[in-house]
Image (cartoon, rainbow, N blue to C red; front, side):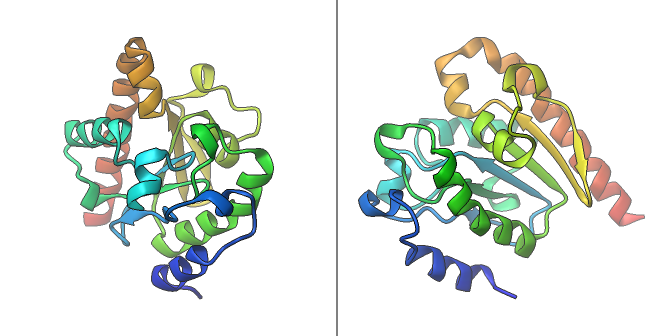
Length: 189
């Protein structure tokens, strides 16, 4: 079985797809290695590629505020992406890029062993929940897969582009908070 450190070393050397050719830094993921919640985005953007950390640009600042609104911090959760290298011009990862890289994400989930998986945006939801997932129609609903409770909500970058979606995202985050509190209550009993 891998550890996160060993897996990160493997990912840093990865050259399995085109995205590795132009990356500055691999954006592996970060946060609490024993987190109950893992947040998954689509892939790194410009700032993430430059620094090597997920969600550090404007969308990351919004995600931090959203976490704070439900009494969580980055240190409480784990944050990762479907692909670990920045797609050119911040385009969505191509299907073959996602398929190549998702094995690493599966290992991250297995090692961290969360109870809740939150897909941030349609790309994450299509790769984790269902290839036909429609974010505007299907977001906010819990899907149970084995031991995992999975939910999708809007990507923070989408909320920056369309503030009208913030109310729905807030409802999703309140839903996530309720599920998280329920899990922690059950663990204490």
